Amino acid sequence: MYREEDYLNLSGIQHFVFCRRQWALIHIEQQWEENFRTADGRIMHENVHDASFHEKRGNVIVSRALRVSSPQLGISGECDAVEFHKDESGVNIVGLEGKYKAVPVEYKRGSQKAGDCDRMQLCAQVLCLEDMLCCTIPKAYLFYGETRHREEIVIDEKLRTDTKAVIAEMHSYYDRKYTPKGKRTKSCNACSLKDLCLPVICGRKTVSEYMSGMLGGKES
Image (cartoon, rainbow, N blue to C red; front, top):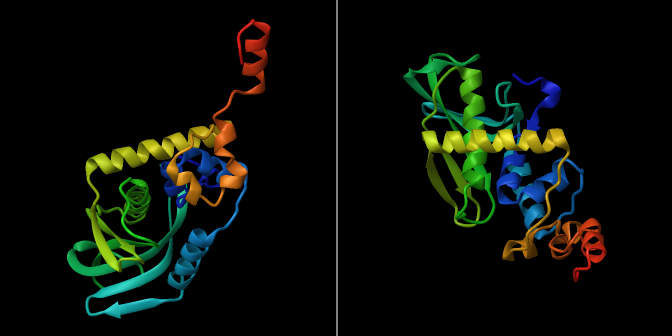
């Protein structure tokens, strides 16, 4: 069980899975630069994150910017939107009559990605909601702004296990204040932190490695 002051930002999971160095620069070293992609995503989330917004569509109630947390995982953050579907096999929700099943919906700019960074962030939201509501949530959704498409994500055991492992690794990095070296990939060109990260330099030898090689009579 983590103390609240040790909680990590849930949204950082997407950064961490995409690039561990990027996550460390943002969440450990508190560095940030914005580009078109990050600005576009920020504006999209500002439009979605209206905590006073509650919409009812038949037997579905939509709540935005819902705060969630998990003391077991040591994370906290906001869900872009959570749909509460009225269902007698669901759970009681404070302030609502009847029983409901919770279904998180995470909004992303762009289109579907090949990696798991978005799915793991969504899974972490599910894990928090399950802790808070004492329920099981079998599926959730990712909505992509570019394609205007909602993708159903099955929250299976593998995704849960992988997400928990990533969160544990994040805590390990944060506790050690560890910023890993970067490995340059084609994704670096689109990263807003590329001028702070300097991935080309990160791949070179450290000063200690260089000096060790020189003193040992090896070519640097």
